[in-house]
Image (cartoon, rainbow, N blue to C red; front, side):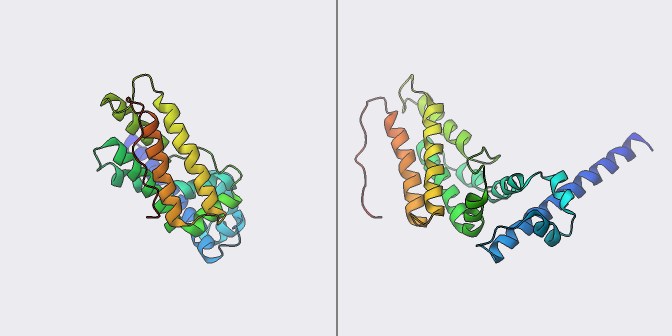
Amino acid sequence: MTEMDLAVTENGRERGKRLRTQRIVSAARDLIHERPDLSPTIPEVAARAGVAPMTIFNLIGTRDDLWAALADESLADWQDIASEVADPHQRARKIVDEVMRIISTEAPVWRALISGWRDSGRVLEREPSKALVECLRQAAEEGRIAAGVDVRRLGAMIFSGLVGIVHQWAAGLIGDRAMRRRARDLVDIAFAAGRPDNTSPTWDLGSG
């Protein structure tokens, strides 16, 4: 077998793994939508996907890893939408608003993930903290955030607040609209806290 033949074989294997992984994640999502009050088990997901339970462990990992894959796939589209906004403050608001919109749109999946995922605060591949820090860093370069302000710390504050807001939503304490509004408020607070003139804008505390 030539090197080219080996490369073709390897590419075929990788494509097969990717397709099986997608089938497994889709099966988990379908089961959650069908039974939002019952978290699916690995054997149930395997049966729906038409694979052996060991295949899930080999391709994805544990049940928590499967939950992470579900969350990552759900958050796949916000980057392209938010990247169209040039203003760093408005882009950060767009990022958190889009993430919250995705979560509320996939409500059964995210409520199941948060209630059944032991490590629901873990870092996800597509979570927005790095993008938020980049927005803050751009604002600092433009003089809209004071020199010496730790933008990573501000970004971590926003992300920690988002995690808390999503958990409140998952528990039924707030609705979709309040979740998105509070997420945008977090961004506004972070940008106001870093303002070089040490002043904050007039807050709109209406019910809109």
